[in-house]
Image (cartoon, rainbow, N blue to C red):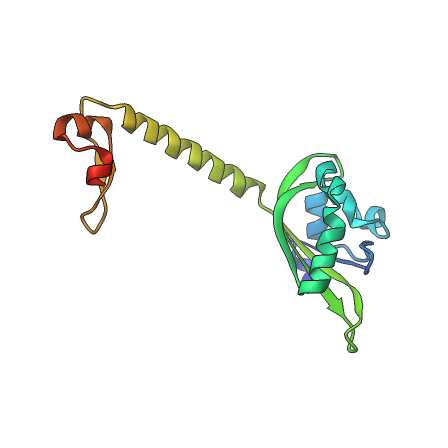
Length: 167
């Protein structure tokens, strides 16, 4: 019931060879497959062509089995062919004797977070370039401890210190 109630994460099981054996509503939401379409299929279909060529799906299962967990971020593919940025954890499932019986796979769609981080980086870079290009005004940043943290061309021209002398 818990796994079925979760829709913000794709949670499903794989057999030891990577065949999908269970599928929750979150998996349906992220990946676009109905349970009847994906049960019995290999999970490698969720990986990009590039990742498949490097055998990432096989290596992920081997890592999970050997190290007790596989964790990564990367592009994954939906049923319609669109991509989403995913955070993935694969854990081995073992029986009481330690024999591998399958894998638990949990995926989170981080596409929106990744886009927001990229936008923030672009904005910060634009601001940095803007500040660095100002030569008529001294613009510099002082940390809470009172240390100079940045120094623009205007500060150098007006105050006479080069950035490496003052920062």
